Amino acid sequence: MRLHRVEQIAFAEGRSAAGPATWGQSAIWDVVRRLGDDAARYNVSGGLPLDPPLPLDELAGLVRALLLRHDSLRTTLRWDGDRLDQVVHAAGAIDLHVRAADDVTAAAYAFYHELQAIPFDAERELPVRAGVVTAGGRAGYLILSLSHTASDGWGLRNLLADAAALAAGRPLSTDERTQPLEEAEYQASDKGRRRDAAARRAWLDKLGRGPASQFPDRAGRPPAAAFPNAVLNSPALALALARVAAGLEVNQGAVLLAAAAGAAARLGSAPEALFQVVVNNRFLPGMAGAVNTIAQEGLLLLPDPAEDFPGLVRRTFGAALSAQRHAYYDKLALTRDLAGLVAPADHSCFVNDTRGLIPIEGYGQAPDGPLTEALARTTLSWPVEHAPRRNTTFALDAQDAPGSLELAMTADAAVLPRPDMERMLYGIEDLVVTQALALEKTSAGHR
Image (tube, rainbow, N blue to C red; front, side, top):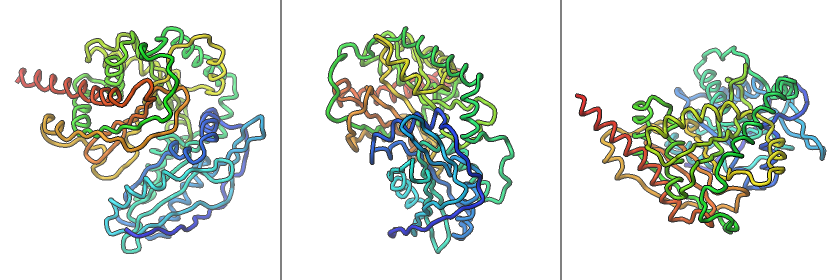
């Protein structure tokens, strides 16, 4: 692997416009503007293998076509002290980071993390940078890193799908795509305001019924000076998750959420689990294929999380649909609503399933072989500590890894010290793997 150089990809002839920011843009901007260099952890990044490899000028043309197709990639934000606006630029340029390597795939993964770690200035910088790994002077891997003000993970998937179509010479989808300015118009309409009000009412209702603390014996402790980050790498969880989802006829996300709720209940003994879950709320016309920041937290309320696991999974599936239905709202307005509550339920636990954003061969693919053999390859590491996060007990991310699934957990050590974080992560794995083994045994008994 060699040092990389930075080139420019210029564009022109896009539309030029400005208007109010969307709910998603406003919510993310409100968070990242306070974080400085730490804002990079909110970036969304992904990659695409190019087979056959492309000449660099064709790769630049591909990225230019993406910039002109999606307004969000050409949008900066403007704050006047009272209102946040979005500004779409007709012309400009973004950085293309170029790295040469003999092993393109290995270099792409390392480069992906490097680019993702560079923060954006949402007011002065276009919210996308591209990276390419070359071999023999041709582009073998494209990496796109976006500010979260430009897109969420589902939007990034759409962007990568467009890139794949362009690289293969296939026509792009002609389905309607809502651009951020048009989304903001909908949000300001009567219909948009009614949807926002209904979603915030649903949140307040759940906050009136949830637990005062999900870890009652540790309530009221001042936050720790640093929040440890633990990463459980589990090939067995990747394998078991697919089997349990198929066996119980639900999606994998519901199984993971149920396992997180069950494992948390073992530690906290609260009568309900209440999670803020990042959900794909692209249910309005034109949003399915959009590259916007649309995903927001849905509030998931699960009574009796310590009940038998299959029943918990099925209830989680239904509860997650309800959370998704009420996950499109003005987050800053919701924040004001919450400030007026005297004693809202504990909503300081976050779950985010980010799988599917690293399309590198072997990533996110369940391994072959017996579950018991895969289980022996589980590892737990403690890569970093973060600065304290406001109103956070834990944030749990599910993410792809080579032939495996990783659970990355950042937690307030005053509430969940490292031994409890470890117990929770292994507890999630145990619940899913145990259920998969039970399904295997039942299946074998019916043969």
